[in-house]
Picture 1 (spheres, rainbow, N blue to C red):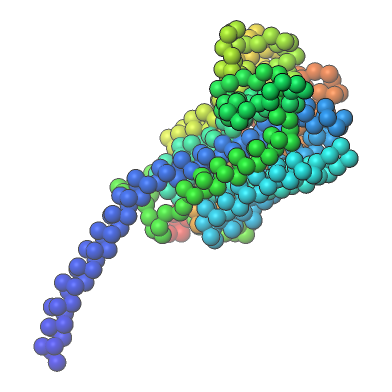
Picture 2: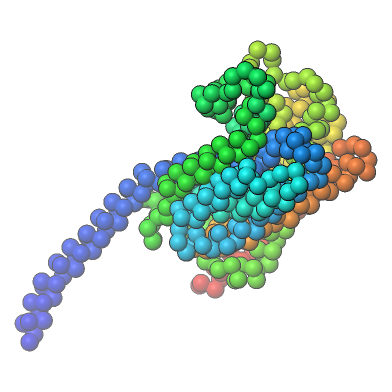
Length: 479
């Protein structure tokens, strides 16, 4: 009996060692392969986000629809408000679903919904049916963006826990840049077709759509453009979604030690547990203050710049299609995208709340002096500075959500935090518009926006204190 036990132990030990060694080699191989393949997830994330970010270029649809149907500005703006609200609201169920089945399928659903919204709008919208525009672009399109938006962020952060801020910034930079690449070509293609002569060829449409060629005073009309844009949206989002995937359970980058980095997850909480924490409430309120101030200003950026510049342009003559990259809105969009990467990197070096505090203080000071800007150089600087800081919001808050409440339920947790954007999307433009109508000036609107930024900076300090206290409490309980 004893001899059999000794023999079993002798033969079993090498087998156990071989099994453990094989598992270690398999894990190492998976980490190595994952380290190479995880960048394809970022490519897919940017593809998805660039298309979703075209929602910020809604203003290009206003003139064609108002001109053809005689709609008022309020009539068209309801579609935009509904899209923003649906975007924020649907992120909650979409986030929960992607936590369960992964980012790929949910992002594909988003792409299909967004594409379908434009195809249906091209058929259903008419002068007597503005409600059809609300249901298609507003409800269906907003839901498509909500389903697609959270998936790239969640997948990217799970693959790059060692670079959360930076990689989140890269993933959402496409959303900020979507307007830049979309608005100019869309404005040209949305023009009515020529009454006489040759229509635009498919080749010309593609070149105008890519921003390589300028329109010649005629386009394809809004209905044909909606069909084209719907197909492009669905195709690119679905292709990008095919590159999204979650890492294997327990995966981490080779050589990365979570305990050695400044930002580490304090707990893995589900959304109910998260909502019961004062920290989540404060983070949500900070999001609302910061996003409301930004949307209040950005919502009036184009008319304010037009009021200052008149018919003149910042771009030198002879640049052709490239001139649109030097317009104030384009400069704001460029730095909006860059700011998401910049503040993400800064937050990796310090921490999220301190980065928020610095960002909101800088934005508040910018808004306070913005109303006095009159020179072209001042307009360029203001557009760049406001875009840089506004873009950082959409990097710092998802990173903070994953830091404080974990990655397991990140999709639905960030969906709840992001719901503050739905409130900001209503309050910011409306309050800004009311203040302008009351005074006939942008001064009061920008002073109010600056004050909100200072409130957001103070709220970030409170978030910082709460996070530190929570971390110390958990460390003491673990001893």
